[in-house]
Length: 134
Image (cartoon, rainbow, N blue to C red; front, side, top):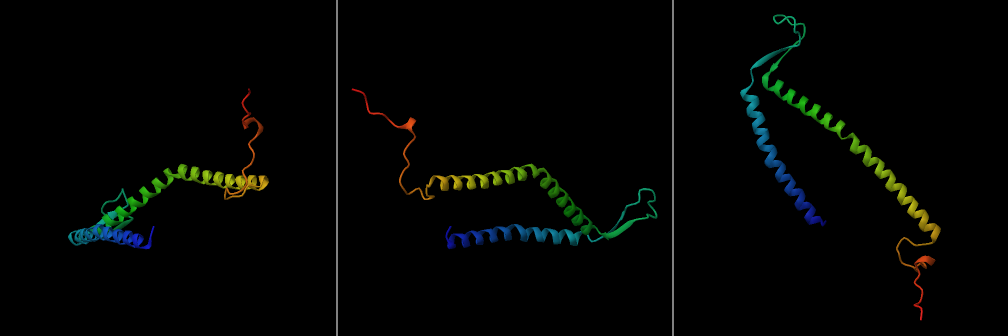
């Protein structure tokens, strides 16, 4: 990829990010302004009037924190679900590296260069064609 094509791709990516992020930021700010009322969250299921543990904060802050918490839990769940694929990829990368090492060792032992340029090796006896019989 040329430098001009790479910078054009980067520019397009920035424009798309701006098209998505600017309206999202406007929506978040509008949501925060519209939901400034204070709410009390109680963590005590036994005493509603005098909870042992409670938290008082604006409604928009509660919603945003819960949204971030949900994204975090979803990301962890996806990461755990993909562990099988990551393990398989690591195993295949190790096998590929081992095969590269084995190929290089075989090339060194047979004297074949890595470029493929050189005298072709004679085929094994069973693959040689015999002259036609008369």
